[in-house]
Length: 168
Image (cartoon, rainbow, N blue to C red):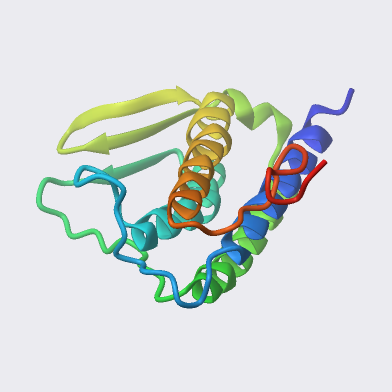
């Protein structure tokens, strides 16, 4: 089995499912909506999904560490619409797909670190970071977005088969 080919194919499948869900965000949706005060807003959640698929994927493949100092300013992506989220997803994932296509199989065992204020929060082989912090993290937050849309009464597309809105 060609694992590199399978990793590329899985990324393509998950990005297609992500794009499909972002397309389901109605133009008139309240991007400030939160199902709970501790939850991210719908707009921030959509932005985080895009960042996970794009920026985190790119950093995992092209860097060995990401370091932030205490107080370092971070500007999260806050799309003004589903269409803006899709445009950024398309742009950023094209970069990731190129990096993934050029990634050497032997590099999956290299460690990747996320360091905040001198403390390592992530220090794992790149294959674990890719699986946990890119693919699984993306799927987790995509499911959250589906719940947000469902709670607001909107239809959601199926990801691994038809949704209740699509019938069987």
